[in-house]
Length: 477
Image 1 (cartoon, rainbow, N blue to C red):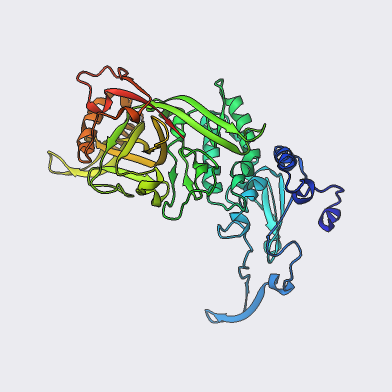
Image 2: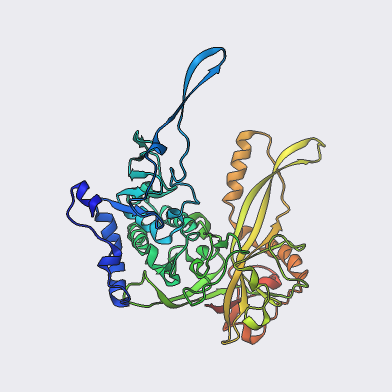
């Protein structure tokens, strides 16, 4: 109250006072309004939880230290040293404030921030920041790595790719933060979700849906998020999100970066998307979610568990949580693994090779990879699966392009990166089968592995590869 009075304002909103505690209905109602509260406030006042606004400190800790020394033969030289204070820059990832999940939304939405840290006070607005340690206003300086600049997203996000790119960056930061209450995973960023939703609606004529932390434009691409550290990640004790959502994980994730350019490389079709909200606001908690997908489905029986990193057969599996490695009683056994391709990418990788001229030349190799979801059968229903990770099947397209000049190299990189994978899908699959066969690939599935199947005639292949003869419809929960 003292700070608000000193700033010359009469009103203050404090969540612990303005929300009826232990009342879910009031909490959901007020939580739905938080975006408006933060966006329309004059200033957000934050504090370190452990020290409060007015902690005890030594005033001299902010004073510069003046010493006298000799240097280069000059006597009585004066040097001013301003030592770095603990907590003097809240942009450090280890700062307690930075690790609190709810704070990300406050910083993102509020036009101004006044932060009371352990040792000093920091100010930040859309144009820059200042503090007691650095009282000179510094335009463009950010306290958190994405904060006040983010409040200008309405001006920056002109297209779908821009909107989803901003969301991916937010998820990268937010997924590594802590929440006292697990169910707050979606509510703690609901205001930002609504902001992104509004911008997406302006950017596309397609129907925009928010689905457990993913979006309806380019939805399939977004399924390919990756657990950043599966050794420390864990699943929440109670249900919070479907397995295909990054929010189903307690741990930092690398979100996918979807784009219109990559949409043509998607080979999985999402037939149905279902998410049930716990209340009237779809941006808050959810009670269940599922997707019905149609794609190729590969069953393999590796001789040893597919661990992190590259296997001898050229398959890379990244588990969401390492202890999912094959607990038979959990219903998530990977002793028999299922791989559902989602996307095929073409990339350009540079290598120096000695070709027919016997002179080393810089070449670009078209490198093709099939990306998708690693799945485990859910024994409860036919064709029902849980996501347990992602996979990449690396395929050498066996094309080497020699580029003699810098201009040609750039043109070739662009050509390869924009390659229509439809032109090379058949040889890619055939070579991929050689890798799958190393892991006992069986193209015939048990009828309980899928809900229905149909022949795949999309690519009009002659002598269709075994791995692409059928499209299988499954449900992922």
